[in-house]
Image 1 (cartoon, rainbow, N blue to C red):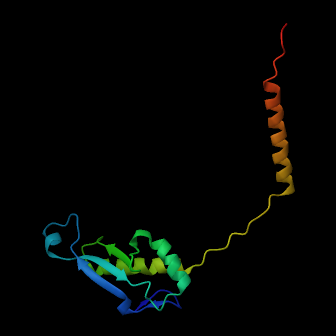
Image 2: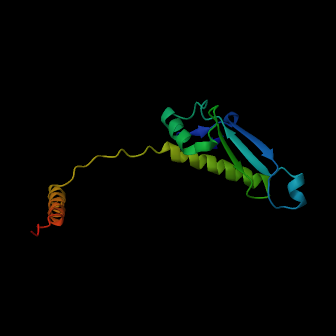
Image 3: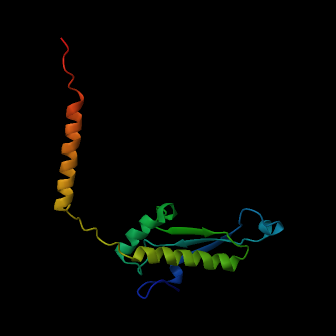
Length: 140
């Protein structure tokens, strides 16, 4: 069981781990050992996540969200399989923690009376500058 917050905990059946060979340098170890971890979390089917958290998680996950409603995370940072496993679980927990925080509603504010007056004064001044430009007296 993976504890995220006091209210949210993820069951083991919701997580699927697959160990794959990592890319990059590592010598002969890279060809022999499957140290990279691919974690799949069935978020859409999870009974432990509230609906608003699921929608925010979908937006936060981006390309890591599959059509089936799962979040897929990969980690091949270290040569240790257990360390990669810890890293990817921490990433999932942090992603769900971010999704569990509801964004604050933006309160629309009105411009102050002073700012309205300053804006109108600036427009009037600019209009006067433009009005003085084009009038050239006729020389006959």
